[in-house]
Image (cartoon, rainbow, N blue to C red; front, side, top):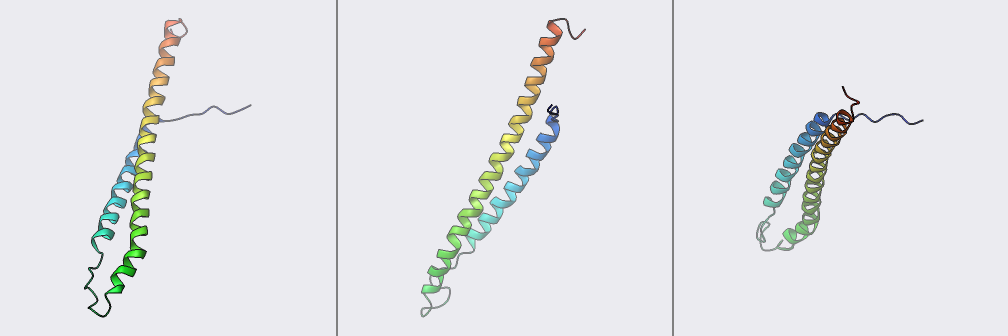
Length: 104
């Protein structure tokens, strides 16, 4: 026999809010990483290729940070939405029980 599932919508919301803050921190990290790219003359005229090589390394990392931020934000939105869905379902079921006379 399976165990009943217990969900606390407020706990889901709190965790979703926490994940939103994490996503904000990741977005800040992405902005910082993107703004620290060296210009073409950063290492002098003889080493003009260095910034281009660094950009090849840095661009995928900046993209990965951006993808992580979006993924965490999507998860936060899903948790907050699930909390609302649980509340709606519980309220609808409770109303149906009351209307049937079972919740006197």
